[in-house]
Length: 243
Image 1 (cartoon, one colour):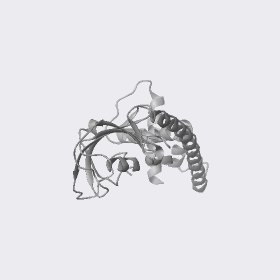
Image 2: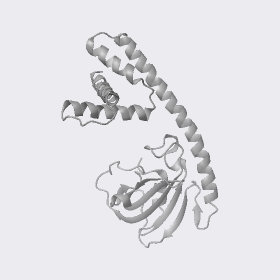
Image 3: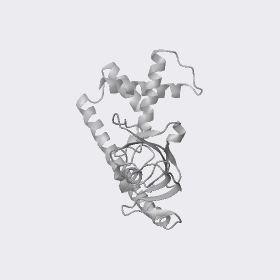
């Protein structure tokens, strides 16, 4: 609770500073800058949650607490915050449901049309792929660790991750990635470059992943299998394509 109060205090200070001057004023190092930074962090969190708060009442709550003269007791405060958090969770769940239904329909339409395009192969699982370049190397097994380059996008073209952009290949055990990747990798040869079209059931399903991959999102990957190497340690979870 003390940490929460400190964070909210920072937010209140940042809000008060915004009301006090039309133009931003330089912050002093130390307490002032720390308070403002905490306020920015909490403000970003509240904004991301879609929290509807009254800045004036927020500041009053802080001032009253510091003065030891609050208009509600601590138990009522806890109950109020718990109710608010439940409302936020319920709202988020409903939004996820609506977005998931929309994504599912759009994904089905996209994959249905894509299956008819020249060069696209549809496997029994629903995974689709198109060969962009052919290699002559070995095919990985589920016991192997592979090195690959990839770029991932949504069906509208929005890029959410790319090893090319990072300038470093992705190394992972074949079974430590989404199902669509595992299936594709065990069919590719080293040197192959494929375009994968992955239905949500073989990607992240209803839960989605990160800020850009929504629930029931179909995904597109360009994947280049660079090599197979011995697995020394389990790969760290560092990219959206891992489980």
